[in-house]
Length: 291
Image (cartoon, rainbow, N blue to C red; front, side):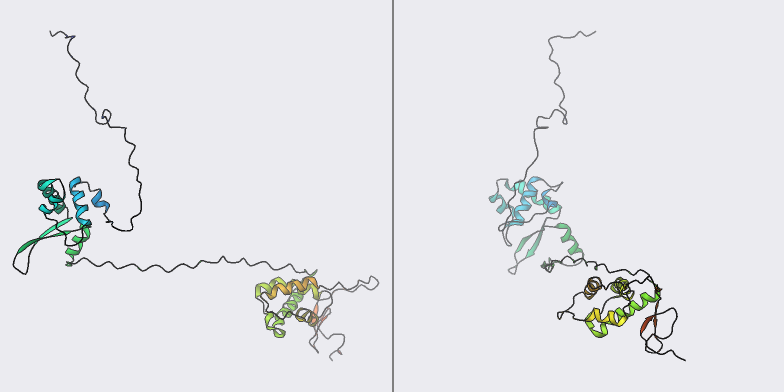
């Protein structure tokens, strides 16, 4: 049976990549300090800069090739003179880029009969493959997108103010309200500026009815609403009418207790067609009764 050797060294603990790596937990991550470029810059897609299969040498070489002007030499010997990686590593990087479509090397014959290698750099291999599949060999010329027309600042819509309140009749009978509506409808015949909407008329009808309850004829109410109008344009005639119906409201007729008079509805005279109060249709007090 083996005995324990107290002088033997303990085995070194195995390194766990997730826990024992010396650099684990010491990096706080990259922080970008970017300044905008206006000249001398090259646009590189993230599909190249963060390619999962390409080596760092291949990504850097593709970035360099895409930054060169057209016609620049990109053969292995020219690149080896430019960079310290040497022909072996540069040749391997070019093969990587060729395998993933970022570089195409085509053999062409010049006018003098010499065979040369034409290197094509593709900044978007997927788009290049799509063009070749559709039979197009030339890269489309990008068309500048038209600038959208400047948006006009929308003015906030002014909220329509409510019309001023108007007097209310004590007994709004249907005949009284219908007569009041007729007074409002006839105002535009005297002054076209007094054309009002149906909604405004519905608001003003009780005010006219309150005037008619004070023993005024429709003609008298019409004159009160159309006399001495301002000469300037009326932006909201219904507001002017509501103000006049309230500010110029006549007093109630005197009440005589010795001879109480019932307030009869308005009737139209069968002879002169004027309005009068009476229990039944017929003629007013100034016209002789019809026989």
